[in-house]
Structure formats: C-alpha cells, structure tokens
Length: 286
Image (cartoon, rainbow, N blue to C red; front, top):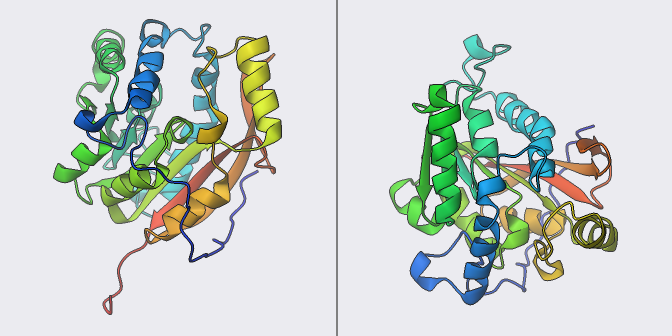
C-alpha cells in the first residue's frame, strides 16, 4: 500500500503562490473576501459536522485510514517511547498540532491514542462545536485536547518548534497561498518531527470524479466546496517543503468509494493523496 518516495529536488519555487492564503495562514485582520467565504462555507456545516450519516460522512470515514497513517508515520521515525509501542496509547508523550481542525473529527481520534493535541481553525462556529462535542461526548479527553480559533501565523509566534507532528488534513485544497501556510506549519515543528498532509490532486479524473460527481451529481459534499485552482499536485507540495528543509518520506494515493462510504490506499495519486515529510535536524556545520 504505502510506498516511500525519494524527493525529487528542484531549485525552483512554485510561481503561482499569491500574497494571502484563503483560510488558515494569515492573520484575521488580513483576511480576504475569499478567506471569509471559505470559512463561512464550512461554518455553515458546523451543526452537522459530527453526524456520521450527514454531509461529513466521507470525512468521518477518512479517519479509518488517516489516523493509522499518522500513528504509524510518527512511530516509524523512532520518536515514540518504546514502552507505548503496540498499546492503545501509542502516541503518549507526543505533542501534535492540527491546522484546520474543523469541529475536531481527527483531533479527538489522535488524542485517543494518548497524544496531546492542539486544534486550530478560523471558524468560530466550528471551534464552538468542537469544544461542545469534547465536553459533552468526550469528556475523558479534555485534558489532552485544546482548541483555539486563530490562524497558524499567529499560533506560531508562541509555538516555535513546539510540536512532534503537524497535521494539515483536507485543508490545502481550500488555501491560496500554500507556501505561506506550510512555512508557518513547519516553523511550529520540532527538528526531526513530521508534517502530514492529505488533500486532492489537481487532475482531470479528480475534478470529474471527486468534484463534479461528488458535489453536483451525488451531493456527497455541498456544492462549491472545492475549486480547481486551489488543488495541488503532490510533487508541487514536495517542492515547497523541500525549500523548508523538509524531506518527503512517503506519498500514498487514496480513493473514496461513494457507495460504501469507505476509503482505501492505492498506488496511484491521480485522485487523492497523503504525504509525510520530516523536518531535517540541523547539522553542526549549519
């Protein structure tokens, strides 16, 4: 299933980055109309976010493959205390940051593995829903989960090199300035820590099968959730991370079965993909 890929190092930066990201990487005072549109679009779904049979069904189902990927990716780097390996609290002692946490679907699941997880998002209603669900339905996790409504570039100011892993799941496809977002994420990451990304590839099959069919025919996701110009290919993400001294160690393709509401890993990244990159530890000479 999962396959390690050596990073194709390129010296050129992506030329299509714009001055502001559209959702999570800029200060609230600098939000563009598009930023606000993206945030409001997702806030409108807040009340239904934890409904496994609602419009977030695919996101709930995605946990079945993304949680093990993050867990195993962290363990594989050798940063987990050996006494927790093969236990239900395998991520005990790990500090994680989820950027664009929504109402906490992934945040809570990672906390159940023993990690201390901070979730940040710009959606006030989403953070409110996340806190309410944590308090009312997952009270046992309250000492391991913290939610904040703030952009990543604000969060990084007080959290430089603070986290063992940063998760950016189903977020990049909603952001314009991906380089700015990822740069801030990497700054919060400890040397040797991992950044995990899941997103859609910018391909015709993904647009037709995932967006046109999913949003406008089957109504799996609300219309207008995804936009062609915001999708990004895995190689482009690798190029950005390479400029930030992060080595991509894994790229894995995935696909979604509309009828069964299930995800699975595949060898092709033509549709969706997950990526893990590790922030390199500075050498003495550097």
